[in-house]
Amino acid sequence: MMKPREVRLREFLSNSNLANPKSPPWVHSTSSSKLIKIIQDETLLAMRCDVFKGEKLCYLFAWQLPSVFVMRFATPPPIKRIYPFDTGAFDRNRMPSYLTAFDMQNFDLGSDDALIGRLISLYFDTPRRYVDRKSVDEERIKDEHVLDMSHAEILALGKLYREGSTRELGRASR
Image 1 (tube, rainbow, N blue to C red):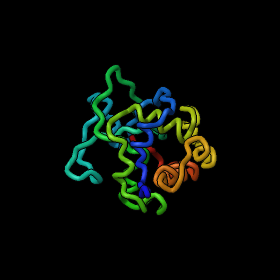
Image 2 (image 1 turned 90 degrees about the horizontal axis):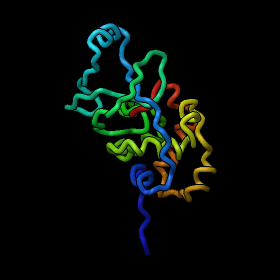
Image 3 (image 1 turned 90 degrees about the vertical axis):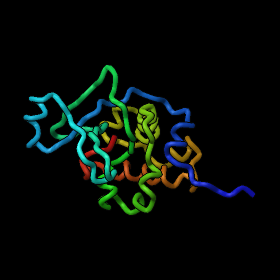
Image 4 (image 1 turned 45 degrees about the vertical axis):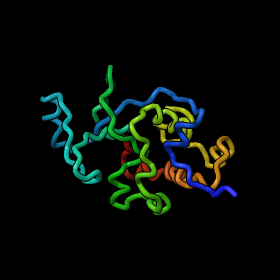
């Protein structure tokens, strides 16, 4: 008898035949006190991260905020890692318990930015629905992708998007 195993989000997206739509622009959020310096220097700096200890990172998000820098690059900078949610909120237990019951590392998509488009296709269907935060319902995802309990993390992330919990946090991570 074959033992069941959990399917990780990165593995699921990598092996899927989901469409890879055009990804939304990257945005950077920061304290408004830094706004003038960023504009004058035309530079975003990597800062010490309190989630990924010992690393200096410049957080970029695929989402909208009241005041942001929106960037498109001819050649995007290297990506260290991609998460489908705000890792700081996860680390500080500001996410629902059905999501924080899992290890945050299980949601690491690595550095393949093509998975962002597949993630959008899976949970939102189109980039417009993603920007509007209108996720598809769970039954549709389960039916189209034959998901079961081995996909618990994938289903939990869908629940997060459907409940709009990311709206309360103000950003979705990239």
